[in-house]
Image (cartoon, rainbow, N blue to C red):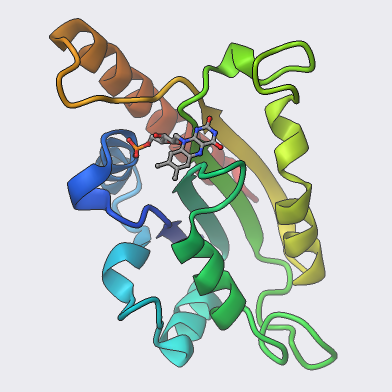
Length: 187
Ligand SMILES: Cc1cc2nc3c(=O)[nH]c(=O)nc-3n(C[C@H](O)[C@H](O)[C@H](O)COP(=O)(O)O)c2cc1C
């Protein structure tokens, strides 16, 4: 059996998330054996228990980064986790081979509509063009690139009407199903 680690990078999952919270809730049912690391609960003023988190990573065969896109990249909390935990001698360098041959999958949401992410769209570039830094991160750590699962148009406002709320919920649930299938297919 593959060991799966899902790292959630939303900084305020309980207070400010609609979609990532639904995705994670659904994943607990779809991948009941997966280890889910909520970075919002794992830090103390943005400091992590580095050794503990490295041990967690070592046990995984498949690592999923689940996050909302913030300013075309990772939330600062997730970036800080990567900066601190994926250190020299662990993730890279001549003796840093702990992540070798593991698979990295990225799973993320945007507020911008999927149709906005194209060369002549409002966001000016296809969504794939925002991913090379993560692909290179995986490569530099000796990991395999497992691809992405992405859903756009997930802006939820507290006073949104019930029909829109249901549409967004369905999109988030479908996202979780596609991700779970992709994780199961990793070999
Ligand atoms: C600080 C911040 C930056 C954001 N940057 C982007 C962005 O660059 N592109 C985009 O499409 N949406 C952006 N959004 C919208 C979020 O991606 C969107 O609200 C999130 O994916 C929805 O997930 P959630 O309900 O779990 O928070 C941003 C939101 C915040 C709060």
